[in-house]
Picture 1: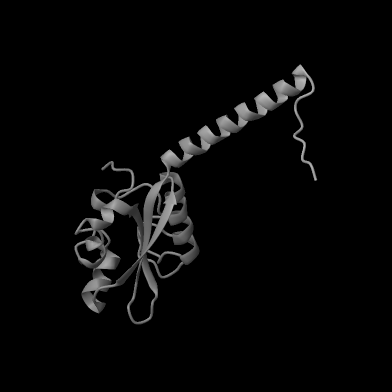
Picture 2: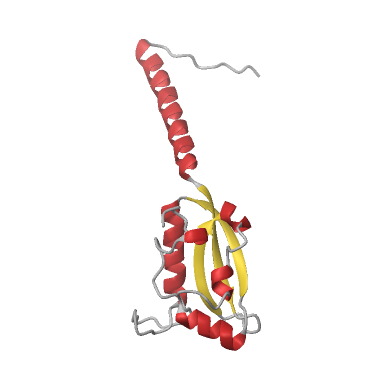
Length: 155
């Protein structure tokens, strides 16, 4: 069996092939550019150790996981979140599970917002919601916070 490669039969065919290669190169460059915006982030969920009820959801950059205070605010009872502080004082520390995700900052914020919305936040005096749930998060997620857990690097 002989295999024949089809060669361009006219100048127009050569232009089509050349154009296809140029488009493939552009797409490859766009993929590389998109990947350069992607980083490793984490989403963490603090749960009650005995019942596994989720109590807090947060996000951060993976390299900051090494920071000794990474989840310190969750179990410190010195958080800005009075509901979380009260829980830690009365019931003890929470178990924190960490999940790594390779994505953009906008995607990790969106994941945090969707996770908090799906699980639901407790009704509190500051932010009232219809979808009440077990989370002590005061806000719906996304850009916010600061310090060691801030994804954007801004305070």
